[in-house]
Length: 238
Image 1 (tube, rainbow, N blue to C red):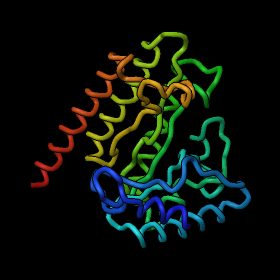
Image 2 (cartoon, rainbow, N blue to C red):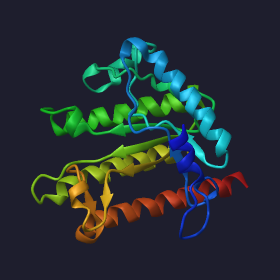
Image 3 (tube, helix red, strand yellow):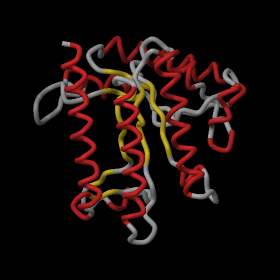
Image 4 (tube, rainbow, N blue to C red):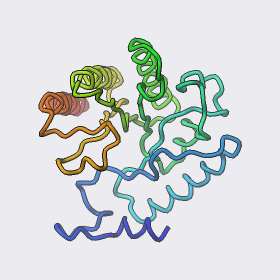
């Protein structure tokens, strides 16, 4: 907990604002892709409750999420069919996100890695089912917005079009779901945007915007239309 407190209370040396008070930070994630022994999932859920309460005790200004991939577990056996390969990792998408300190739900989506050997259509169909299932649960059970927190595709050789076509499809699907769900689908974040000189940290999904103008335009266009959708929702409420 000491390390967590150090991060939340650290003062930015540039703007002199503590992270817990910085309005440019959208949210905190407890852990990247937490997993647990499927036979002892309650241990992970207890940890989420404890850490969620601790973070909120220090910083109640920012949103908080878990950082989960979104896999279903034994608590919802009828939903395990949506998991890639029907496997589990000790997480319970619904139960874990019902923790009151968690403000929004997340899923990750890597159909290329999860469904190796499958056709492009099979991967696309899986991705759409994956998003649909979690969006429905988020809206009807959790009553919290959903964010596709990570998605990406490894470029094969220099075939940037291979990645761009995937990103267009995912972004379009996210946009349509955001529009039809009145904001229940809150957005999506691609993995991983890097700057030049950081290639040593890449895992194959890296996007260097200055070197890939076509991909940069796709991200820009999605940001623009999602922002317009937000303004539309706000105008309708007023």
